[in-house]
Amino acid sequence: MSSFFNLRTGPGILIPGLLLILLGGCACPETAGFPAEPLPVDGKEKILPASGALTDENNRLLNAAPVHLNFPYVQSACLTEEIQFGRPAGTLLLRFSRPQQLLSTLHGWRNGIQAAGNHYNHPDSWATAHALGLEGMSENCLRMLGIGADRGVLLFTGADVSKYAYVELEDSKDGEELTLGAFATAGVKSNAVRAGHDPGAFWEPGTINLIILSSRRLTPAAMCQLIIVATEAKTAALEDLDIRSSFSGKPATGTGTDNLIVIGGEGPAASMAGPHTRLGELAGRAVYQAVLEAVGRQNELFAGRDMLARLAERQVDVCKLVLSSARIQNAPLRQQLAVELVNVLREPYYKEFMGAALACSDAASRGLSGDSDRAFSDWCLHTASRLAGFPLSKTEDLLEAPDMEPALRMALNALVYGLKQRLNKTSSPRP
Image (cartoon, rainbow, N blue to C red):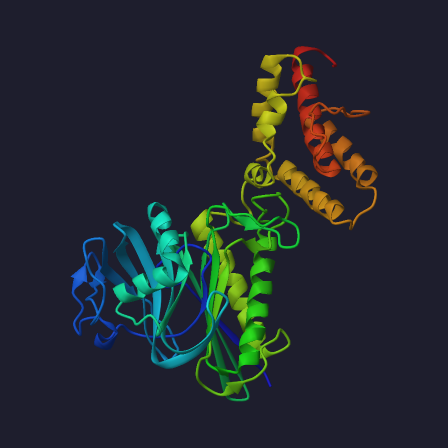
């Protein structure tokens, strides 16, 4: 029988860190701590403290914007604005109509959970948060939201939770409907890592957090399988964006502080959720798309971004390479070459040429290619000749970068040598 997918993306409210939440629909009723008739405040809703909520000058709720989802067991969802420890904070919060079982990589197995979410702390409050520890910080945040410490689960991020991405996928087959939603917050500029390669160390938080919900009642096995699927989809998104490790410059697989929550949910039982299942496929697609969007919103990193930015992410500063080259002895010429190289790397042909060099370098670093020097050298000579404006018989290494992958080093040298010959040509008939 035929099947179809519906894709719906974010409700226009944005959130940080890479928080992926596969979820569903709600309103913000009085039982969730909101007034029956919301009071408009700057186009948002005034949030009233729930019974027992922690409220003082340094820890208080300000406003909440509703997030509309399509899961009956999600009683309400909203993005809050808060003051915590005297600094701006916020939470993407889901409240459930009935207690849920969930699996969290930060908390383990939890039962009887009435609320789950992702919480942002301002950098100025990180020291206080670390002093409290995970348990103390969770209790502080949950009390402020009017939720008992044993009834709520929060992930934490240093990324702006107002820059979230939401993706919802639906599948219908043989009259049976399946829905899966994904919210994502993402920060990958400060602590992206490559698992299996980079050493463990404490870095500034970036964070990819995930929360997964579906229209199924998941068994513990299915919840575990969704963790695998979501993690693989997240890594695939980072690979397709060419996100690099903040430590080594190698392709990143995540950040050093990623976490994930899978909500048990309600509906027909699902005991399998791997990539071969329809549930697993939807989860992979939703997470992948949400991660792409969230990284773009938080860090403005997109697949077609500037080549200079991609090189900088690999810890390659092309201007510094040219200006520090002892093989180009004329200082004004070095400065002119640096300017010309920056301009050339923005031209489509040379941007694609450098993109190919990056791909060759990655393949060589993984041991997937043999003698890339010989295979790539003809293209480098052709590109240098194109820049020079006349055929060249060879290129020269004008940049000193002994630790750079051969294909990348060859490509940059080809561009600089071709530019140098073009500049020489303007001052004499032939260089």
